[in-house]
Image (cartoon, rainbow, N blue to C red; front, side, top):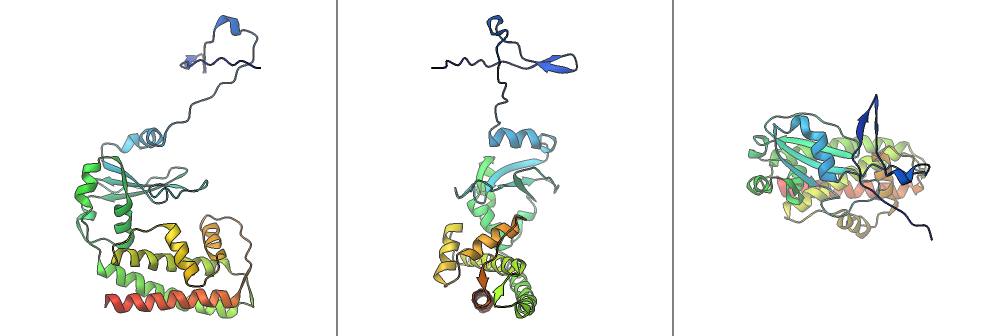
Length: 251
């Protein structure tokens, strides 16, 4: 049986580098030096240190907030600040909004973001902001944009053979369908989850493969497409029907 000894030591400066001092009786032995991984909160605060003077609140949303994360999922973070700034951090998708922006009616996606958010810093601010209203103007814009994109997708679908190979069209249609489902959650005051969206997709007779294709195209990964044109036609018709239904509900 191999016995292991562990020590926690602080790394100190040594010349142009650094060094870790170990006990004298370890001389001649091979050691493994590892740097403990920071927690998500520690990692965020370290990275956001230059912006902390402007930050009023930090919140987790998306798959991690819903406990639906997968191994390759980015961590979605909402920052509320006194001014807008752009920030990129590997493994994180950071969205910065100002307090003033949230005093006005917001788009449905922002509404859901706030609804599912979990506080990392300043939960009291989140409680004050949460009674936001949804902008009907933004909903109408989303619906009008979806109609325009459907016309473009229609042209691309018509160009395809029976063995459908255009992943960009499937991604575009699934993106719009997911957006329409989120809009429905907002209008009916329901919580969104990927699990419920997948159930909605299956209930409407669509192929399971569509969501996989959507995720891989979104993440810029190679994807093998094995779907028939008539299946994509069903997806197209569902997006079209849902768009028309939402338009009637809003107008």
